[in-house]
Length: 193
Image 1 (tube, one colour):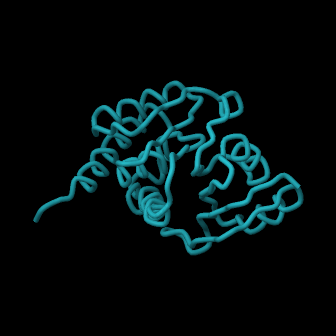
Image 2 (cartoon, helix red, strand yellow):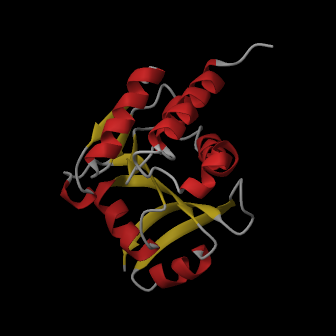
């Protein structure tokens, strides 16, 4: 049986995450045994949902590289910037890029609000901040006509209601690959109300 280059790279990434997670909290240790099923599969779903989009990508608060590194592996022709303030996590991200051979990734070791506006066509974030605050980060770095892909847990509907008090946006909620109550929020026309 032949293993695809993508699968091989995802397996390498998962192995590195398991190794580094002992020293740096990349994902909750209690979820490490289900890394592929719980964390990577949702990022793969995002890669599938977004494959027809064009333009550069920015992943905010990349942490252990979810979804940014999974996107980079699944969409090798797209330039992806990972914004992460934690130097140790940036070391991990650089190591994965080197070991896995990802040439389409730039790593920005800065706070999101301190990075010069990036004007990305696509922005993602996972487990970063409540939606109203997260939209202020997205607004800073999203190009006009761009699209946000925000991975949210079971409370996403309440977060959307709260965000609509200060923001207007078009929303398509895609069901999570791992939890029917969680969602990948695809957002366009984001404006401060």
